[in-house]
Image 1 (tube, chains in turn cyan, yellow):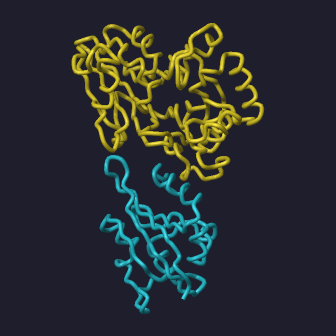
Image 2: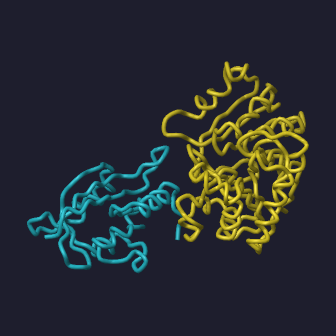
Image 3: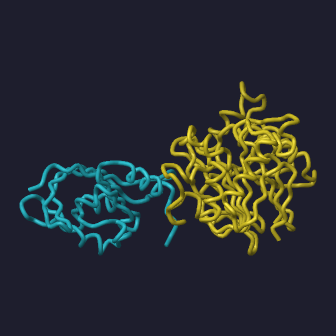
Length: 131
Length: 279
């Protein structure tokens, strides 16, 4: 496995210390880490899944717009942070392994290192209630 | 590849008879090889004596700065080749998000902190920002990577043939962790150190001292040993000694760290004047 950039290592350490659910995606789109609070929403433990390729993690949890419409991969906030390299905030619904729709507020941001190196993206969730 | 230690100390020069054996000069290491290429790792106060010992016929010196904290640049203005119009001096340093390397170095190398303005140095000066991919300097292949330390800081891996030196003088891979339980790919600095024949690594504190200095960017000696084990190095040189640790304290600290870690690799605590031939 390739060595991670220091910014990704530190982002994981930060996520590991925080109580907000956080997903961390590298520049290739792989979900390289999600913390314990995120495990509750996703319904899977990171220790079990390890890093997930883009194809894998897009299947692990569905995102809907609240009207039952499943967002296309390219419309997911994390994917947009990766492809457009822009931050965003949105309210959406996640259906993970527990088959429960979690209403969340999501902040996603691209991770750009010194020298303009694009490193990936991070999503921070605030759970806004279970529907 | 020959590695010569000219400065071992962290934070502040610590001259005196109590520190004479490990040395009182701040970080500076010379690396050279048979083709005459000279690399200087950091420009702490040890660089003055290093510069004075270089042959006057030397036409190119290469200085690799890990970061711009004072203990790593304090000797720069006293490096003899800077005043030789026939000499090329190349300086690499970490890129930052805001100012270029020249303007950051000029904060120190200009009045009122230093009498000679940077732009008036007689040598032919070339500045390079790192990381910048794989660099070839003579027969040395050099790679830099950002590591865990406050401010822009890189570590260097220097390869010559099949021999590799890893230089991480200021490094806190244990930040936020009770110990290094992660895999090498998730640990700061492992990309530089993995499998190195010699690792020169920060070992500034005792564990008790580290507990009060978390986030300052340095390692306890126990962390240096754990990191060396994780990175599968052949030989560890604990480095960047705390200015409050005299020779007797360092003897005790190193013996205790070796006794506790029982390392499978060689350990040579950094002392001024030590020369290692990695071949």
